[in-house]
Structure formats: C-alpha cells, structure tokens
Amino acid sequence: MRQLRLRWKSILLFLSIAGPGIITSNVDNDAGGIATYSMAGAHFGYSLLWSLVPIMLALMIVQEMSARMGVVTGKGLSDLIRERFGVKITVYLLFAVVLTNIGNIIAEFAGVASSLEIFRVSKYLSVPLAAAAVWLLVIKGTYRSIEKVFLSACLFYLTYILAGFLAKPDWAAIGRSFVRPHFDFSSVGMGMIIGLIGTTIAPWMQFYLQASIVEKNIALKNYRFARWDVIIGSVIVTLIAAFIVLTCAATLFPAGIRVETAADAAQALRPLAGKYTAFLFAFGLLNASLFAASILPLSTAFVVCEAMGWENGVDKKFSQAPQFYGLYSMLIVLGAAIVLIPGIPLFPVMYISQVVNGAALPLILVFMLILTNDKKLMGEYVNKKGCNIIAWSTIVILVALTMIYLGLLLGIL
Image (tube, rainbow, N blue to C red; front, top):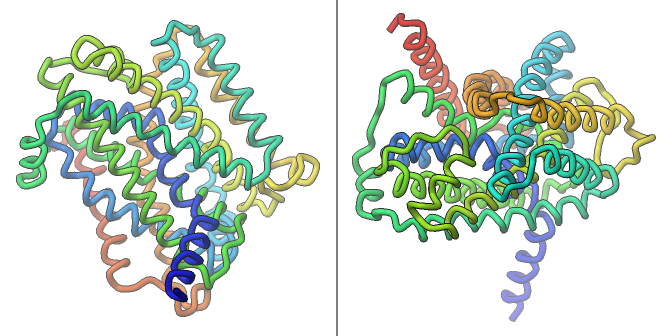
C-alpha cells in the first residue's frame, strides 16, 4: 500500500513538472518542420525514415543538457554564455539566433495562411487574426495558464498519426527502410538530411527549454522528472515526424507528386488518400503553426533579454519587462506582415530556414558542451562520457554534411 502511494505521488509530481520538454519538442513540428517532413516523404519515399532514429537520440542528449543546465544553475542559456564568454561573443551569437528565428517565425505565419487557404480563408484575414490571438495569449496569460494551452495543443498532433493510418502505408517497406538504410549523396539528398536535423534539433529549442525550466523553478531534487519530460517529448516529436513522412511516402511518392509546402501535401493527399486525410493534415498544420507562432517569438525574446540582462518572463507584467514584451510584439508583427506581402514566395523561407537551423546548430552545441563540462558551474552534474561522445559526434556529422552540401552546390565536389 505504501509503495502504491509513493508511486502515485511520483506520477503526480511528474505531471506537475512535465511541460517544458514535451512542449519544446512538439513545437519543433512546426510549419517549416511539417513542410520538410512532407518533402522527405514525397521526394524520397520511405528511404529517409531511418535517419529519424539517430536524430531522436541526438535530440534527447541535447535537450537533456539544456534541462540539466537550467535546473542546476537556475539561469538561461544565453545568460550563461554571456557570463562565460563575454558580451562580444554573445552579441554575435544573438545576431545569428535572432536572424534564424525571424525566418522561422515568418514560416509559422506562412503555415497559418497555407492551412486556412485550403478551407478558402484568405491570408489577409487568417494571419492578422492569428497574430492577435497568439499576442493576447502571452500578454494576458501567466506561465501556468499558457503552459496548459500549449500542452493541450500537443494533443492535436495525433491527427498526423490518424492521417498516417488512413494513407495505408506499406509497413513491410517501412521495416526494410530501417534494416537497410539508404544514403543519398546528391546536393538534394544532403540538403534534406541537414534540413531534417535542423528542423528536429533547432537552435532556438535549447534556449526556450532552458528558459522554461528556469521560469518553472524546478528544484534539483526533482530533476529526474524533468529528464523524463525531455525523453518523452523527444519520442513523441519523432513519432509524429515519422507519420508525416510515411503519409506522404505512401501517397505522393508513388504518384510522382513533388510538393513545396505542407499545404501542397495536404491538397495533393485529397484525391490520393481521401478528403479526411487531407483535412486532418491541414488541421495539424494550422495547430502546429499557431503553436509555434506563440513559442518562437517567446524563445527569441528570452534569448535577447537574458543575454542583455533585461527582465523577462511571461509571469511579469508589461511594465516590469518592457523589452521582453516589446520584442515579442515586434517579432509577431514583423512575421505576420512579411507573409502578407503580395506574391512573396513562402516555400523558400520555410525550407531554407530549416537548413539554416541545421547549419547553425553546431555552434550552439559547442557552447553547450563547454558549459555542461564545467565542474565549477555544474558540479557533480557535468556531462557523462557517453553524452559527450554523442553530442560531439552530432557536431562533427553536421559540420561534415554542411561542408559536403556547400561543396556540391558550388560544384567543388
């Protein structure tokens, strides 16, 4: 009986702590991510599914480092980088992260526009309404209320699993893709692998996760629950990504249909897999875009304000953190306004932002590895050997892929 009570106590404690890891991972399946996964399935079939397994392992390791730093130090990642490496390096890093995030934010509002255009709603109506909704959610909410909304949004990603089963994929072919991995060394193949890594382990995620851990004030004694939160989030995001890939692989790839956006994929699915699959796919895109359009500006605001030493946090009032809320508001207005420009090509912004994520990730990981191996900072919670091996391997692989990709594009290789 006592064991049962302890078990229930642990479950309730986990539920009270869970959130940052699950939310951060699921936001990564945003408009740009769904577009990238859709392209992977439509253009390469089941052949790239295998890559999601090592990407998931790397995601777990990277996210765990962020969560551990947040719990142990009680500080955000950009705050720690500024203290350890100085203001000059931090400003350069901020410039790279903010520039990349602006592309991602534009991609989210492009996803809102694309998903609702499937239901014949003009982007000149949907985008301003979406921008107003996500702005009000953060400006008027508290961390606890916002987290509940975000966790609820995570449930709607299940629509992609349902869409996957409705598409009737070849499960035997899926199994073979894991047993006999396929490597494509063309510039297109290299670009897609970098995009898959960049959209699954995006640089902004590490800043947002650590800031959320700090804002939630998770005690060191409860770190194991935060760790499970990260692991579960990593598994869920990979599962959803796999179902997006296999849905498009089962329907669009055999028909030779090339897609440029997630909305293209949803439209193309209708005659091949039925209107319900198409509607589920489009609804999932809308949910993901709104979800990420809230989180990405928040992440960027956290990064800048932590690095500059300004007050930040959604539990503070506008008057207490004017730079934080001002930057958040500016990013939403900028992202929405660019999407409303007539004739703007949305696909290049959405896809290229994911490739840039993959190329920028090694730099962020190097800073994280130096910090998590600092005994003065982390004490007994420094990285274990296995963690370092996987993290450094991820950096080496990403740098190598990026160099090969650039070499192929420039005709050097």
